[in-house]
Length: 283
Image 1 (spheres, rainbow, N blue to C red):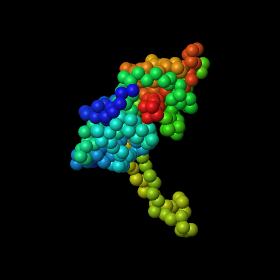
Image 2 (cartoon, rainbow, N blue to C red):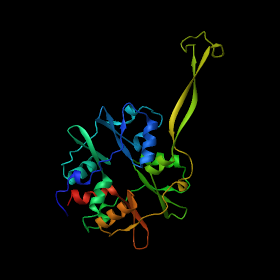
Image 3 (cartoon, rainbow, N blue to C red):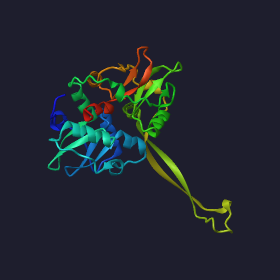
Image 4 (cartoon, rainbow, N blue to C red):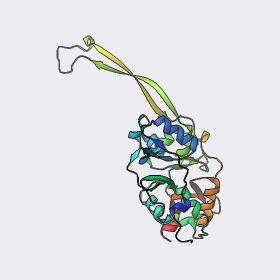
């Protein structure tokens, strides 16, 4: 394996970012247009947070970027070794690291960037040891909003989709969910009564009631079937496939996970890109 690969060798210098003050709608549009899972948040040129698809889905009614973002993000120096970046990403269960030099954002390094580098390393260790066999599948006709909630509770960014024959026919990811989601505006009402429950002389029918109408804006995940949104063209790999071989498949097909199958094409589990990084952390 090549030694001394620096973060600066693999990081992306063209970085999409959000700024404070900012709104959820701006971030929602940015993530869709750039097809990224998250972006750094800057204020006065300095990084103050990171906002991701998960932040939007967990807080669908929050509109202020300052309240949505994850504050005090972990950052890394461009001269740091790539294996250090991989270890930080694994230990903190995050997908991207802003690269900072002299308090200035100079790039970003993600799990995908490290996996792309692993694809060039000719690591032949089989991927079976890095497989995550515990996955929570969803049915093809499961409403997308239900699938999104299942994935949130399972803390999973991807789920295999099975049909009525129990065959894996697709993959659904948080990227697909955000791409299908919309910003929905609605008007809701709250009744405020002038009467007091402590006043025994006040009849319910006699109370003066004031209705307050207020607008609500939220990220709306449609209730269309998962099969309408899922990725159907599956890129698969065998249990004994090499690490770099699978990393190359992920890089070429721009996917974050690959279903692993046996000789009979039976689904064994999902190989996630972040798990592949263990090959260089443990090397």
